[in-house]
Amino acid sequence: MRIMTQIRCLLAPNPSAMTFRGTNTYIIGEGEVAVLDPGPDDPAHLAAILEATKGERITHILLSHDHKDHSMLVPGLKAATGAPLCGYDSPSSAIRPDIALQDGQILESTSWQLEAIHTPGHSDDHLCFAAGNICLTADHVMGWASTAIIPPRGRLRDYMESLAKLETRPWQRFLSGHGDPIEDPAKRLATLRAHRQAREASILRLLSQGPSTLDGIVNSLYARIAPGLRPAARHNVNAHVIALCETGQVQMQDDRLEMAQP
Ligand SMILES: [Zn+2]
Image 1 (cartoon, rainbow, N blue to C red):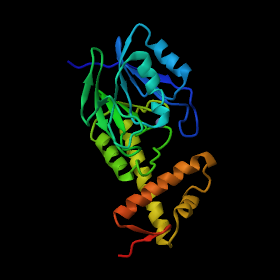
Image 2: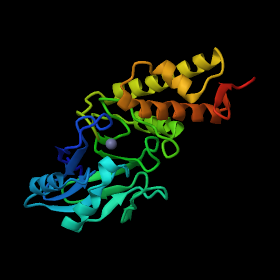
Image 3: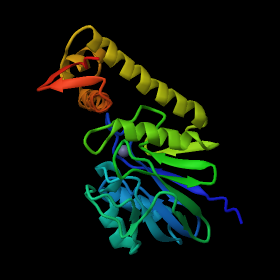
Image 4: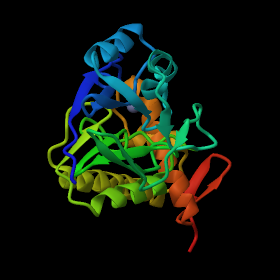
């Protein structure tokens, strides 16, 4: 039997340059529900989750990845509900799950069914969750911005492979960790892929004109970026540089970057 999973969204009160309007907490199913990404450690948000699920039972706490804006409320929600934490168990995670999910694993209850999809890139423990042809993409795919890839746990090559993993399936809608639903998933995936390819091409173009440094590249490519977003931009360029060094296209000597000699 195919379950049509009902999904509700609660916005956490943690807006910022990195979290947009705040973290989206999702309540999945009816009656016996799962909560995906409890969000920041904020008593008002905990109260809002409990109020929204009044008369229901939270049976599972799901985590897309361990970044603080998604995970800090996990202990509070566990204490309030007794529900186990389900997530990807990476040795580098700050918070370890009670139930470790594998790629492709199906989780189900009376009113919902989800498939965990391991999508490293933003973080090595990142999971998306599919409910039929709707995908809860957390920070892997967002509509308002591209994903920050922060080495070493964030890896560009993993991210590109994780985009490809979603590209093989006919999604109807993405519900992401920050911002509005994405109604044209295939187009968004193609846009994000093209964005990274263009970024890589511009880094290679710069280095073909002469050696540079990480900060030199950031200054050239992100000349007018808001100061609050510069650290994320620098991490992203670093992620590209690491990937280019791994493929042997670029080499690094101390902090000097240059095209590898053919
Ligand atoms: Zn986030």
